[in-house]
Image (tube, helix red, strand yellow):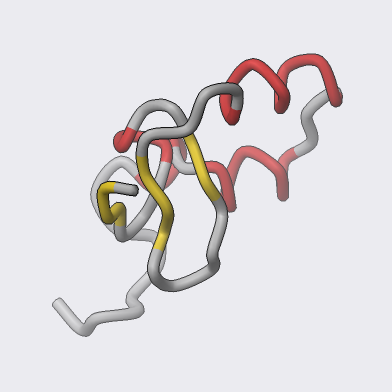
Length: 58
């Protein structure tokens, strides 16, 4: 699989896909509160590494 191929496995659970489909600010805040990982591709942070395409621990 090429590095930046989308959709990739579980992409529908990743923040980039969730935001694209639409999300409330309250839902978004819950996903990013107390982050433990950052996506090295887009820079988003999340408390669950499963919410990111390419998670790296903070």
